[in-house]
Image (cartoon, rainbow, N blue to C red; front, side):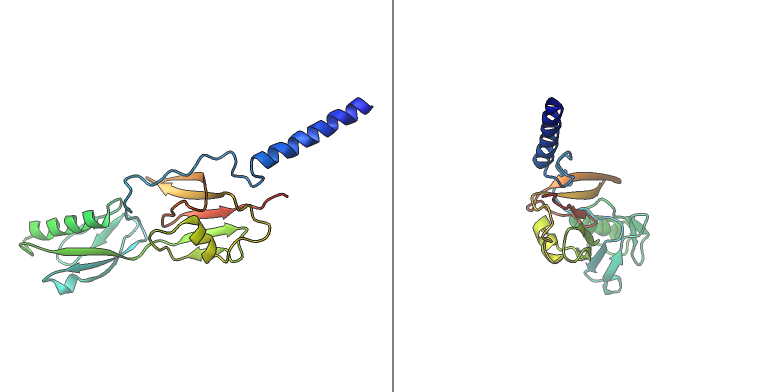
Length: 191
């Protein structure tokens, strides 16, 4: 009987030890979240762009990328912009206006008006949807959500990110850069 109790004690100790090593929060077995390809932000459905076209004030304004990944500008057809950087979008719009014969040497400025929100859930004081700002880190996102609760596993979080149309789930720390649309989950620590 005493050998059985000793083995049970060792089993319990090993179980709690393995939980401690994995962080007790559910992210221990995940790989790190991959950085978005290309470094620069790439536009996706739901992003709003502020576009200014020199000598064509009628086309100046805010345009939201639709479900097909396109925007529609006056005097030219719809333009596919999903997956492009702001600079690439400007170049593509200039080319379309030149090809259509509307402007001979267009100058286009494309800036983000509002990008898709990010979400924070789990062990934070105010979980929810938040406005994305360029250069945000996980720590900034958690701060916007009111900070960690006293039960939070503060070492690592889980991020769900859409990359090239697929949802990827990975581990991140407080210095990881966020992307619009990311879902940040803070797990509860066990002890």
